[in-house]
Image 1: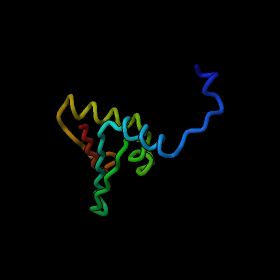
Image 2: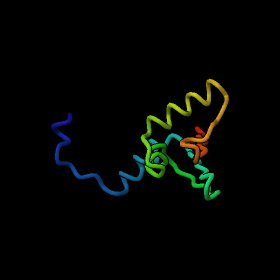
Image 3: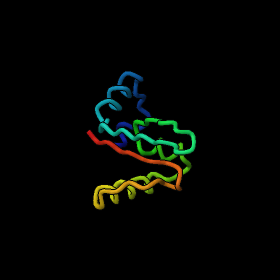
Image 4: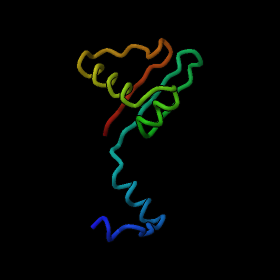
Length: 85
């Protein structure tokens, strides 16, 4: 099957539908404690890039928050809140 699809072009409409169907309802809010600015992202990867981090770091912090029930500032500067719908 993969060979049959090789070189096949996907329209922008199809790409948009595929993207919308795979959306998992993740919302990441990051509060910069220095500037008091809140930024919201629709993916963990984008949020991690914005604070010069890796997505796995954010995921580990989320797991720790869920298990321990505490949320401490990341790098003593960013408060991270992840919501999954």
